Image (tube, rainbow over all chains, first blue to last red; front, side, top):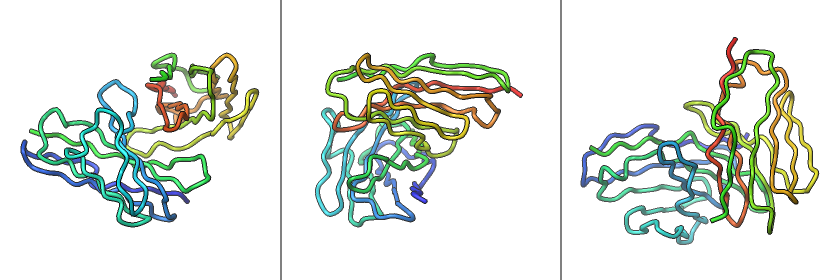
Length: 115
Length: 109
């Protein structure tokens, strides 16, 4: 149980275009979903926390207009990288949890390359 | 930022060897420590969530201990197998999860 999927696993896009990444909890309803970014040789860094039906809470230094997060249902959150630039190239990974439970369940991640 | 440090960064062992690695974190205002195993091209898999000083948890050949007063946790793997090859991440919960950089374990047959 507790499976989280992410789509796509890899995406290459041109500079200036927007890219949407989906995160789905397949066998449970996630009250909270998280989006992380991993730079090469670095730790997973939290970008934002989203609760179903409400606006995402962004970490300091993360541009909310650049990284649009929508959490429309208890099983789906999306991250849209708007007007992508090469410096947005990174590994993006989501996780999901239910309330009052410690564990976060992670998706397999999305490798974004902006050319 | 409350840094979480993991050591070593990478580790190469032979099949059958037992191994351990460390997660260090600030000891003040401790809430919980998470361990994950992350195999290439897969999702990080939750191993343990540790909350109490002196906690010791076990899952098969993998076990972990927690010392919140001195700010460290050890992860032990007994009799390493090639399928244990992965990156092992620890994360301290401080509102959000703050991750270490991971220890990359490679087990040679």
